[in-house]
Length: 345
Image 1 (tube, rainbow, N blue to C red):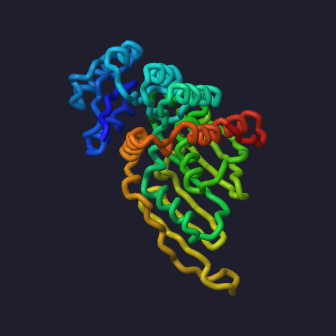
Image 2 (cartoon, one colour):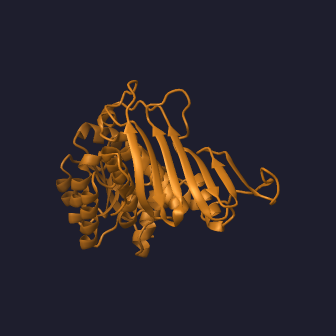
Image 3 (cartoon, helix red, strand yellow):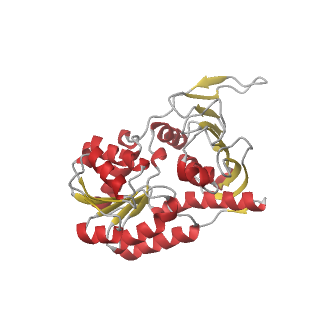
């Protein structure tokens, strides 16, 4: 196996999930050496280094200088979204492969530019869409692929979480769509295997919300093959949180699959052709095709390293992930114009 030298850019709370995955996963721990920590607040970088035993890693607030001094193979980009473009562009200029937090960019124009920069540099740039790497999403994907539900007709998703983050999220524009719904939209695209074509979306912010704006979104997406995907979401709904992975209803021509976003699945298909309500029978929800692809951050990171070693694109390479980003920005444009918007990259 190849050995990789890595610099972590952005030493805030999100970075702990990355370093924990590396420390606890042999396929990562034995292949990655973190040689540098970058943050505009050096004290935060030092605290993180101490917490994870990275006391020998260089700490430098200037990413350009840190990359020049450490010459890593990889940059792990965990900065806030508005800093992402500069961090990725700098890393690519230094000849590094880059794995970024979501969203991949703050606009489609920036996303396209980063794709061009990665291709020009001959380097891999991928996105941590860790929530598609969980057992539930993988099981639904396999069940749909098996044809057990028949032809896919619709996917319906509910996300209601009263999340009090504090910090930059509570001031973000379009916070739900940009910072959280990107996970759900990406998962729906992966589960279905369909192409997003158009969307109608409405954003709002209740008077009781602690976010500056746009903590609620309701959207209807049109997918290829006449599949409909509906999303109802709120980050300011108190009293009955759904799972972070949402609550799902998958409707096929033969029956329906329900998933609570955690451990509860049920699936029933029609078992006869008579009666006002047709008789049903329960079916098993498929298991993931690869049991190694259900560990969130760890699975994304392993796929990223394996793809570099094998010379293939990772599953969440930006040339594919920009399609999920396009869903987000089309939804935002629809909410702004109160019109149906075509989705394109």
